Image: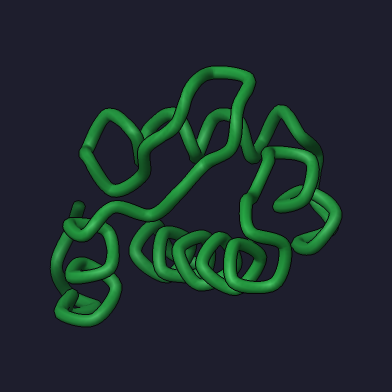
Length: 80
């Protein structure tokens, strides 16, 4: 899986978990994707720095409008 596919997957998972539970936490993403929490933290941190996600360090995470647009508009040949 390349970086763009991974980012799109995270945005999709976070959006669906937020719809279902009203919020999303690192642990929720890790359980859903069956990966370690530290891997999720690394990816989420990078996505926050690009403005694709928002949230406090230990609080709920949400997808920003920029993140939603990125997931909808990104060409798979484009790098983040």
